[in-house]
Amino acid sequence: MQSALLTCPHCKEQGEQQLTPFLDLGKHPKQKLAILTDSLFTLTCPSCKQQYSVLHELLVVDEKQHYAFMLIPDTELGEVDGKVTGKEEFDEYLLRLVGSSAGLKEKLLLLDNNLDDRVIELCKLYLSMQLEQQDVQLFFADQQKEEQTLLFTVMDAESHVLGSVECERELYTQLTETVKAFAVRKGYFTKVDQAWAYQQIRNSADQ
Image (cartoon, rainbow, N blue to C red; front, side):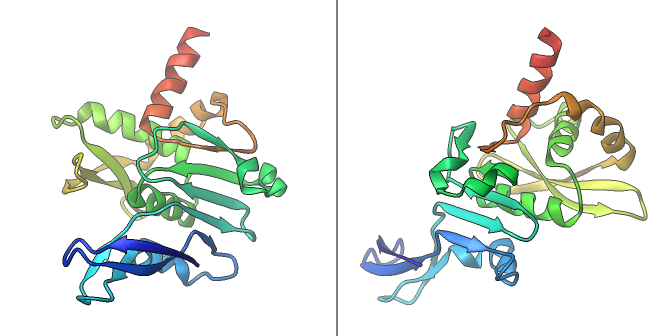
């Protein structure tokens, strides 16, 4: 835990709060629910007792499944050298960089569903071209096995839910071969999102 002096947005009083900068889900699997429900980022003001959210930097590791996710709120970085964590074994891990709690939750859900996030980002690009709304974000929500479809939540720039869209699982299967040519630097936390997928497509077209 890490102590921080924060100002409550309700009563404007400052108070000391305990933040969680590191989680090992291999040792504490129940903490995954705290991420998925946002309770990990929910604090209670010691003065007025009202709750508020604080998104902070967080390193989520699972040493059993060999993955690590680095959350840096609203980051514009494309990648971060894994050496900054002091863990050399990260060279053998799946490393991802995310800039929001929604992005972090999505990465965890994709792993639970045994889905490749690189392929999912290509699926999102395809779906985005079919949508009439502009400046929206898509996040994986569920895998509907009986219908053989993948369900995505549609959010606006302020993270308000606008609805949902789905694509055929067959599209995911077809795009699996495409990502084999996409490079992710070993030992680096990489921000694999739609912008990343678009850039990878442009790079392959230029070659």
